Image 1 (tube, rainbow, N blue to C red):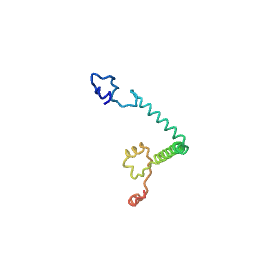
Image 2: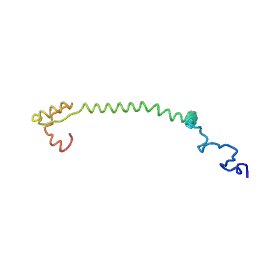
Image 3: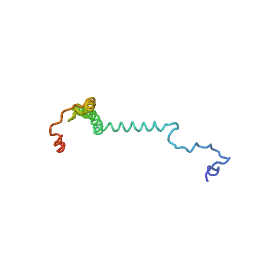
Image 4: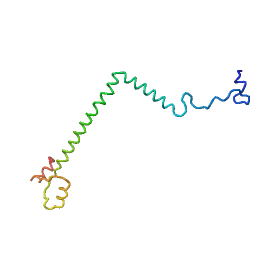
Length: 127
């Protein structure tokens, strides 16, 4: 047996002081692990930016996506505004309902008189 085994694990005749706590070794106390993670992140980012193919795969879509998204969004907004301007209602017999006509006008609808054969067209549904 060696000197440590003869002295016992926690005996009164222990010659050496205890070595510390049972916490995880390799990381300094107080959040030093985050610093090490940051260092690894920076190294990996530097490695990724060295490779030109990877750089093109990252940069090209990022540069193109902004203008494409803005043009698609402006086209969508323009089509919605165009549809909102064309709000038309075909009406028949509005003389009997002046309050309804007033309400429809306040909602920014355009009232057009219905064609003479509107009932037949409704059944065939071209309206």
